[in-house]
Amino acid sequence: MACTLQCSLGMNASKKRNRNLSPPLGPLLRDLRAMIESSREHVAVQINENLVLLYWNLGKRIRENLLKSKRATYGKQIISAMGKRLSMEFGDGFSEKNLRHMVRFAESFEDPEIVSALRRQLSWTHFKRLIYMDDDLKRDFYAEMCRLERWSTRTMEKKISGMLYERTALSKKPADLIRQELQELRQNDKISPDLVFRDPYLLGFLGLKDRFLERDLEDAIIRNLEHFILELGVGFSFVARQKRITVDNDDYLLDLLFFHRGLRRLVAIELKLGEFKPADKGQMELYLRWLQKYDVQPGEESPVGLILCAGKKQETIELLELNHSDIRVASYWLDVLPKNLLKKKLHEAVATARGLLDAKKTPMD
Image (cartoon, rainbow, N blue to C red; front, side):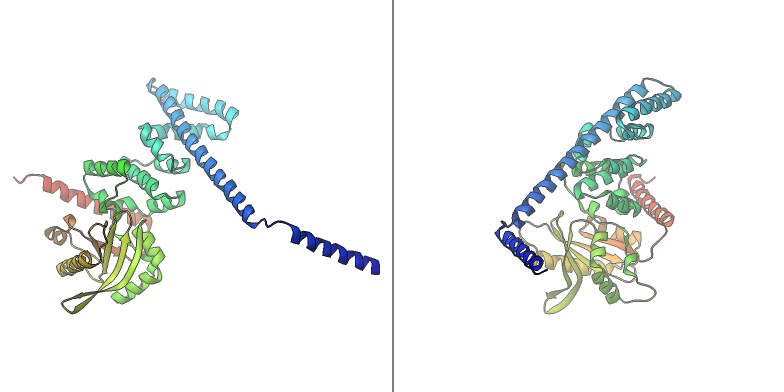
């Protein structure tokens, strides 16, 4: 037994000596892991890009064949037959159902250059969600914003469910202007305030109920700052709360100050419990001019203001010409609405805004 104990102690001592003599593997192992993971990610990206392009080309080829025939039954038969043969040879990724997705893909995105640009950021799962949107402008908006802001499929789904497009100022413009702005985004990655700011903002996550003060609203935003920035959108960074602005020895406090990286502009935010009032415009103009004079850094654009209020009246906004200024007025909704009601209200808002634009274009009798 003594020998066993001594042998065991000897072996343990030997192991300790061997460990002490072993070279340090930490830094090397970390570097090797990083290289492997980076290579895997690169390979995965390349595979995705090639698959997306393959699926588009397959859809385009099938579509060309179908267009030669006027018979709908022929199209169904050919896709079904091709799906059976190809899935037997190459797997379920080429089933009849997926071939139909590919045809729809080629129909929805006809320009190969656009597909080539998007496939670097969008996966096939992204595209499958986008291709069944009936509104091509809305589809192009989500595709380009997804490319620019690198949304995951989950993030994109949240944006679509939250009706982000319908809440942007862009969606309320005439179709030709929407196309023009999306083209600018596609070609130059140039983002405009109409793409950044939205109306309304959905602040149900703040959990505010019944009666509360402006300070309660501000406190709730600061407590939920991460969620608030997510609702504002990508590119916003928090700068200050209760920013002190001194003019002629009078002190004013700006509720919230952010910076938007894409716009390269400071964004001043004022919170209002009630409806927007014309005096709110004058207050924001003072803040913006002060920021322009004392806070704007070289290379930055002029600051922009966002007045968040419980409601607003359209004629007041029009008379003040706020749609053509650096001041945006938007409502906030504190109640979490059912999706069908949210959709109804936003569609009504878009229709109303476009109707007003059309009325301006129509000459008076």
